[in-house]
Length: 308
Ligand SMILES: NC(=O)C1=CN([C@@H]2O[C@H](COP(=O)(O)OP(=O)(O)OC[C@H]3O[C@@H](n4cnc5c(N)ncnc54)[C@H](OP(=O)(O)O)[C@@H]3O)[C@@H](O)[C@H]2O)C=CC1
Ligand SMILES: Nc1nc(=O)c2c([nH]1)NC[C@@H]1CN(c3ccc(C(=O)N[C@@H](CCC(=O)O)C(=O)O)cc3)C=[N+]21
Image (cartoon, rainbow, N blue to C red; front, side, top):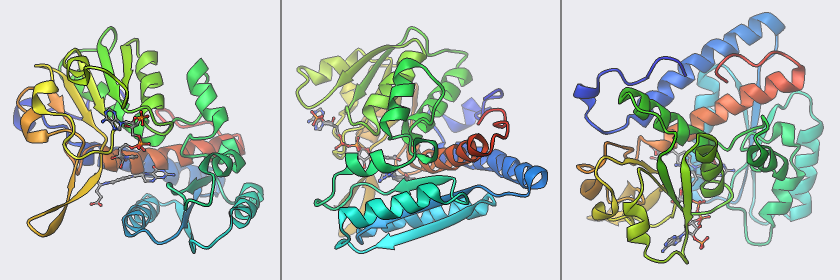
């Protein structure tokens, strides 16, 4: 990322425009897709598999499909009933692994209770694992090898780097606190920030004095899954705050999306803060497209475009 996405600091204040950054990333990716088509006559193809009919999941799947097609890539969605057996899902993944037209496979999580998500993720060919959840990709990230990086942490890092750049600042040496230690968000986020030379703390449900731990953070990443869990006065003055949480709550009889951070309490303290919605969420989808293009190039032995 050479030029900062955010140029007009004074105009935008301290609220990070994740949706705008994601749009500019998708525009860049669309150019790569066009160039790849012209050079090789092939189009990257992503398959999203969704088991069951959780309405919230259906929304993500729909917008993933639309954005994939909007940048000129192929998108397929396989919808399976929640009565599908684990063996049937494993068989489908095996077929997709063997299908040369398919470059990326995403199995929407969480899966129904009768399935082991570890086993299902393990069955995906790591080269097609555009979520970056396979143990091979997690291992590559841990030892510093080039692999596929999970979308939400990757998108969060892009926003952080851009916010730092906009302030003439760098991430190196900063105290980073990540609240949440899941394999899909918290842990890979910690690895990425460690690779940026941050001093990293991972907090979780057994952490003592969490408020004090958070108050020491120059960079605070919330990935907890509890609405407004991080109080405004847990945020250090001048901190960078990344709110990964996507929580649906009822407010005045209407459904509303809120993050894990009490945004109104935190926004006057933070140097830069992501809102929910229009913060990290759109970046997750843009990074999924990025990872699919990368997987496509690696599988076909084409050079990976710069910045992907
Ligand atoms: N924006 C996006 O694109 C995405 C957003 N999300 C959202 O991010 C959030 C986190 O997702 P995910 O990582 O999958 O969630 P998980 O439920 O897998 O992990 C939540 C983490 O939060 C920790 N935690 C729970 N309660 C507390 C507490 N009281 N104090 C401190 N830590 C606590 C848990 O600790 P312990 O390990 O000890 O149980 C766990 O490590 C959710 O809101 C999810 O919807 C997720 C993926 C993508
Ligand atoms: N295998 C797998 N990979 C995932 O990456 C994955 C998953 N399973 N399961 C569910 C979570 C959640 N997730 C989101 C992605 C984008 C938005 C997003 O774009 N949100 C919009 C709002 C969308 C709305 O209004 O509903 C926003 O924050 O602005 C949200 C959530 C990916 N996940």
